Amino acid sequence: MPVFSKVGMRFSTQTLLLQLGVVLLVVLLSGAVHAWLVYGRIGDEAENQALTLARTVAADPDIRTGVQEISKEEGTPPADVLAVGPLQAAAEAVRVRTGALFVVITDETGLRLAHPDLARLGERVSTDPSVALAGKEITTRNTGTLGPSAGAKVPVYSPDAAGTIVGEVSVGYSVESLSNSLARDIVPIAFTAGGALLAGVLASFLLRHRLQRLTLGLEPEEISTLVHDQVAVLQGVDDGVIGIAADGRISVFNAAASRLLDLPDATGQDWATAGVPEQLKQLTQPAARDAEPVELVAGGRVLVASARKAWHRKEDLGWVVMLRDRTELQQLTRQLDAVGTMSTALRAQRHEFANQLHTIAGFMSIGQHDSAKEYLARISATGPLKFPVEQAELLQDPYLQAFIGAKGVEASERGVSLRVGPETMVRGHVADPQDVTTVLGNLIDNAVSAAVAGSAADRWVEVELLDDAGRLHLVVGDSGDGLGAADPEDIFTEGFTTSAQPVRSGAGQGLGLALVRQLARRRGGDVRVLEHGSEGGPGAVFMATIPGVMDEGPTSSTEREDRSG
Image (cartoon, rainbow, N blue to C red; front, side, top):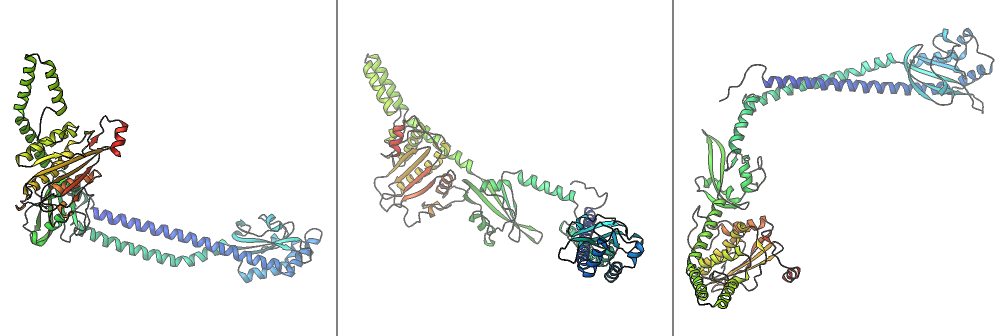
């Protein structure tokens, strides 16, 4: 067991401090942004208020008349005259009443006619009045002689019909007053931020408590090591492992299980609704606690599955399902059977080889060279071997010739005649012998068994083959008694067999048709029943299509068009 370091601050404490820091940072940023938005809103309101007040003052008839009269005079009246004039009195009355920082009135040249500071009367305003004197209203935030302010400038028009610009009115509110308003509005913001901070702290403590409870007090280094050990064990084995928790959730689904079942990782899914074969789900039923391993076909593979109940003391931990691959073993067994059958056929024909060689030697010894050539030509045309398969010469591919010939020998030993149908036309060459052997061998073996078990006196099996653009089409019929009352789709399920003997676990019975259908469909083809058959014969007829297992032979385009037609 690895020794874990306990030095330093615990991870849960570090997580708590980090969460508190994040919460504090978020609260401070949120409060600052909120305060900035409030300050901007108050400033905008002050500008709008200043603009409204400036418009009101500029629209006052007395103000317009007073400004026009001063504008008509030569020069500007002295400051002491302006200080006691009506414009100064009106502007100050408005400023005091509204709480503005200043209400300034100027003539058409920008000289002050009214100002809170009497010493500034008659002087040019400190901020640019050109926009207002040009006839446009404007809101501003700037710093003048009375300090920073948010205000507005509005042109003053003459009271006569001409409506010429005779001056402008500037109104401003102190930035300090805006800060005071912000200070009043910031109190709710502060309380909100404080409440959020308190809630964040409480949530962080609760999260820390839950984290410690879920991890059983383990530190991240300990959890990481445990996970690495689990991955190394589960992913390092060739057998599929599926763990089902007590609540019915898939907790373990290793890479081997995903590969064998040809399914994506199902970890976290509900076992009852997961896309695994139904036979696996039946293994985890309470009644199947002591069930024997079962064979099934999944993902084009023959698998042996077993399930065990998992307990920790008295705690129910769920189920563990183990999957083992027997596909390669069955394929090797079938290939060895084919090789053994072909070897037997070759041994049975050795006397024929010897007789043919003696015949050729005899012709040569008596000088009958033409007869020897004719005899050799006849052997070349019919093939050196004579398997007990009718019309085998329709097959141009040597692999199909040898394989079907070997199957013919095997069928002949069981009293069944194997023949190639007259519609057979194979001009290409087998590119994937393994899949062809699996599909064709299963169909022929089943047909031979059906013919042996049938009630017809003449026992036969007929095979027709046709290749087309890389596809191989197979049709296999027999003289048996057909499928009886069985549904054509049920015979492709795992475990189905027409044998009178019971199916033994691990014997491979009842898997052939299910395997060949999955194999064909995985390549984009299919296997199906063409004829159901009847008692007394003829029996059932199966058709298989296997794409991508043939290489086109040296046929011409005309021949290919004829075949397609």
